[in-house]
Length: 191
Image 1 (cartoon, rainbow, N blue to C red):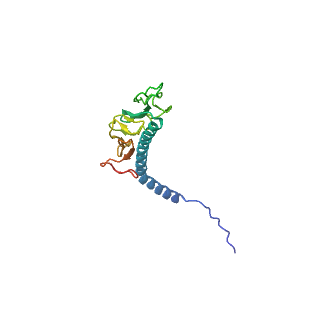
Image 2 (image 1 turned 135 degrees about the horizontal axis):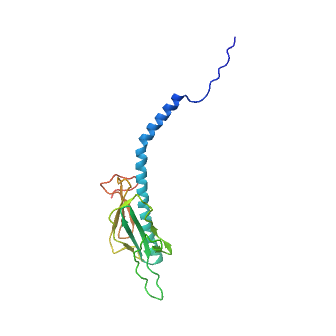
């Protein structure tokens, strides 16, 4: 006598599904702080990279155009911006005018080589800025900072755990570093 074939249904049992969901919940709960920390550093690093890039571009434009370029921070806390403004073009054999600071909150200002050069006030809304450095004027001949001297500004992550300092030396070269008392960030040296 032959027994009828029993057909087995494929799929998951309710118990298997519940165990899988419980394991996933534990893994996600353990990973959530790491993701939050990652995004905190990511936002800060983005702001610092933007500042270094703009300072470097302003310096390069000063030498390229043979016009002084003024770079200045404006604002405080999380409401800050950075703008660059080139000196006026010389006309009729006269010398070029001085490079004046611009208001980076005004979209019609901060012009270098006919294009707007600014980090907008709302570009990095959660990143805060420390004490603002004096304006930097990049010399049209060598790209050095006038008045001669180093400049530095500290940017702080949205949660306040991390700091990155943007330093501009007297030669106009910008770099980032992490202050000694703050946690390290991969790829950024300690000051």
